[in-house]
Image (spheres, rainbow, N blue to C red):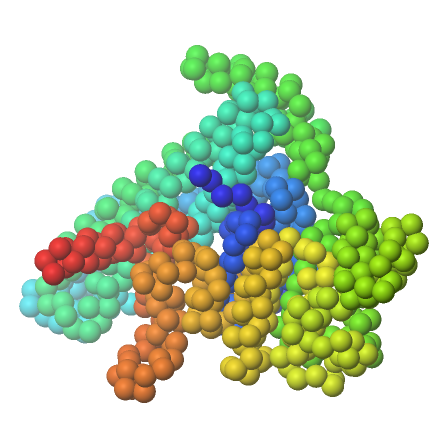
Length: 617
């Protein structure tokens, strides 16, 4: 049975600064929080976990992405397919420019290879203009004999080899663009999948848009594979050059054979990419056309008519005619602008959200106003939402309590003559005693309490609103160890009593284990792993998760002394991310990890080995 998501986070991006100083604190993360669960979010200081917590409350400005509360947009913005397609077009344009630069650079590099080859193998001069070889007029011997150390010759002089660096830089730039393009495609496909469930878009239109996005996605993956191969070939060429500098080559024929073979493969792979980029460009244009609006739509319709008049392929003409007909339907973006689910809440709805979503802050000292007594601090929410205590149900509860404690005055207070100010005081007192405080504490100020007591006041302030979702932003990190368990037990108790859903943010995995149902591990703005609490502890997959778990202190001094800590080194662990980019993958039921294909294969192999060991045992 599918669980209901009370909060959905989609492609959340939060950035600070501008231009070159821009820093991504949260990098397009997505996750769901199910109703009634405690969702743990764990990471070291500066990882972006508290930033996410504040964004869920609307406190932190969101650069991109959206937060949905009870399946309706609460904060941020829904994806704009028109803008996303324009970004995709831009990335493909830059890819095309770099592809052209590589073509020119490889032509020059190939010619230079021939010149050096004829010079040192045959002792002849290769004319770059005529493409012919001639004898040197000075009769000097330039041939390199077999068995000589090549490092004494200028075969790999950097001054004579600038084009290889240009090729490498251009390939890296294309790979970076592919990664950005792939992220946009992934984001758009996820959004289109959500729209399909909503059934608010014409099914034929949505199906065609999805088909075009899938087409560009598959082409992007094919280009990425070729560019990754090219990058690895360039690294092999560089290795041969470095081996020459280190004196590892003593055969000039072997050097030219090895280098020539790699160069030939590089050029062949490069030639495969150009038509794929051209095909991707055309598919992307169709994708941009079908979602376009206004004057852009008129331009795209003109472009489609021109294509129809020139193309001889009947299948392509039929597709263009189909797209043209679908463009007559209501635009997807216009439909979204009228859908209640995808429109930001108005003032009244935003006011209601504040009641439904509450936050317990990390610092119990600075989060409470020292100039206000406890009663006033807790009453502030009730003053903003008087309907919480000015209702018949709450009034009846107060009457029953009053009659029980004042048997001689039974019947004197009724719904007709009740004073709602007294009902408000009753609610505050009841909640304060529930969190373990005393009635006399109502008139005191926050500075008169300990850290644990202040945090209890913060919990009471949040729960008096009768929320359904609470962000617990490291609520126990500033407390003594002896007090932490009390606060955790209180939160667990209230979750059952008031049917609450928590997101529990912390940097200590050992604490989160005992309160969370599922745990997400965040590293530098990326969620790298997500699984059920026990599954995460018993079978951590991402190296950063393993590093965090190894840092958890053990209560046994002997075991703690023998324990080996695991240090996370991203450069060593993810050495091939430039050619094999990571993706959010479900490697087991409910267990997700950010990994590339090599890492997923290693995870599967380790799983098989562990099963084999268990069977043998």
